[in-house]
Image 1 (cartoon, rainbow, N blue to C red):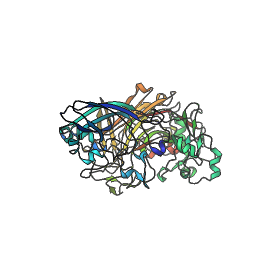
Image 2 (spheres, rainbow, N blue to C red):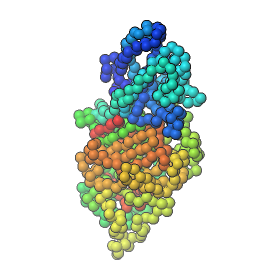
Image 3 (cartoon, rainbow, N blue to C red):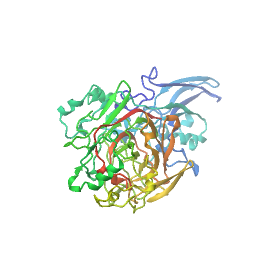
Image 4 (cartoon, rainbow, N blue to C red):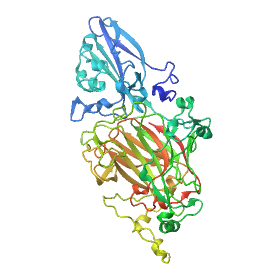
Length: 592
């Protein structure tokens, strides 16, 4: 995929930079085998084969699959152009047809992706993966039998779209006389990879408290809010939403976490002896200035993010991150990165959660009735908002979707609704060391050098999946068994965990993280090389509603409230502020 101007036009395949005329050329030959002169007509269709639903109902191949209309398919860019005439061909004669087409976003020209009369094709970008092509040639008599909604894919039949691949290969079109179809499977393969050295765009409205002078302080030639970077940068600075529930009463201590030998004993001392009135109320912060904590290195083609060090009197635990600016639906999203280490030499956690996640794409016209809504939930409905709590309204459709890697220090347990702490709470007694310097339980120490790779799908508590449930339940895939956890029936996400060594995942020069997002399942993988990935999480449509809307990628280093992860052996409020920056580098992102 060519990213040039894709922020405005969506991806065009091929682009003007990729073929001589910016089109796919094709040709074929028609021979008139009838006994009379005839006029023939033709049309070409394309469809993404890698990330699609079956065209036909698995229980009745004569019926279209209920979600086949969601597949990414198209034809001529102008949907009003139906079957093109080949002209009249004399009996026994042949005619060679030459034509061209290209793959574009919003290929059905659906009104829901228009805004103020403009076709925002980027709102339904082409999918990555393999594409097939279907050439259909018909006689003039056969053409009369083809419905308008097949000739013009913008039209619907009985309130929904009909997939032309179903119609001609399995449905009524298969039985048409004088209708010849030629199906070419997996003819091209499409991949995408944003240029990480091409700059970082700063969206000024995200920095609500910054003045124009503030922006100038940190802007560089490839990190700013210029029109050039708006059009050409593939990455933007990500600014977190900070909820009040993230507040902690933090110990007023600054520590060189990895260079100063901070130990479990020192952690226990801070936890036991700092009274609430001596602590500092802290919410995780976000950058006050654009480009202050993110940079694009055009020499090494990488993105750098850093949680800045704290100072006495300027206490901060700041969340940092980057976000891609072009949305996709489905794909193997792979990130090569060296994010900050989480555990020091005594395996004490620095309080950071390294996160690689997908989230629904916003943009003009996005709201609860907008262009990027998820498929309707037919059982109970979705929880209306992300933050609304257990008594939030339920609605048929929402835009919110999220798929996460959240990697932090917590226990591997799948907790029940009443989860016991891993150690008892206690008061400090200065004359009894054992009362405050308590050793962690053996089952926690077994994973002392490991961090939890938590894999989460935010399904907004839609009850439609046949095995939807709360609590813990087993999920089996490819010889592995995962414990999937949902706190209660109205909880908006389901999570599995996998324990991995911090020294390997974040102590090495780089590591790979992959979210394999398919229409009916999500597979999470990590590994030391792209060809050595191993599975660490799995969720499918039987237990969780899989997102089907367009999403963007985010990579962050965050200070979470550890209350979100019951059982963690280290609590955020007892972890010192950083004396040095925590640096993360992102080297490569691919969608394929």
